[in-house]
Length: 215
Image (tube, rainbow, N blue to C red; front, top):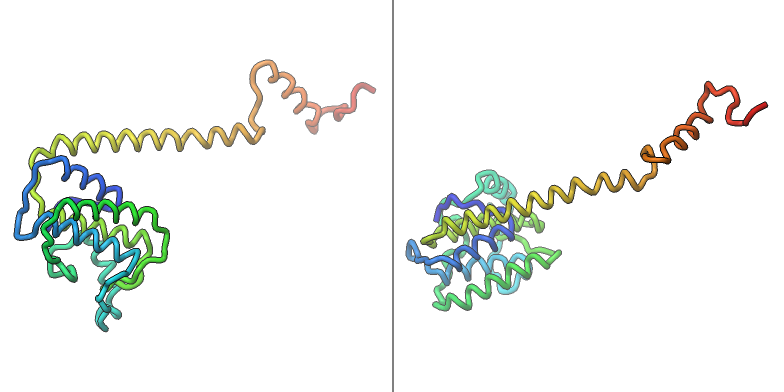
């Protein structure tokens, strides 16, 4: 279902999932919570395992797969369910098991370094590209879930995310100064300042003694 939600990474999916878990919720259409969790989990599993997949790329997708991928990334979202092969899946009716499966698949994806499976429409994708696909798919699927009381949770999550980013930026800016000090080419301070100046002066081109002492 079309959604204004923007998920770009696996971390984004996990954050949104934590909000969904914490809130009261109900399905918006004829797609259940179990189907949402299971389908997203299966997509992630197949991207790193390719076990049990029966999807084959047809001639059109082989020719236009990269174009379709670029178009989806540019647009940033699915607009119709028929754009997603195999959706909706069969409803197995166990949302708890489906949720556990989804959490496990998210962790597995983060730990997996390759190789990655071929997408049935877009062809060969690397980890970053698959992550974007999962994010776009997750945003679409989570649109089938209506939440109640999620505003406060979102505010808290955003505030926490900003704090983490500020801390990371501060840590990043601190390191270059440390490297500069380690090179030993900075001007000394304190009581060593005069010694440094004298040392520099003895090698100056205009010094009559040229550092050789009195004659």
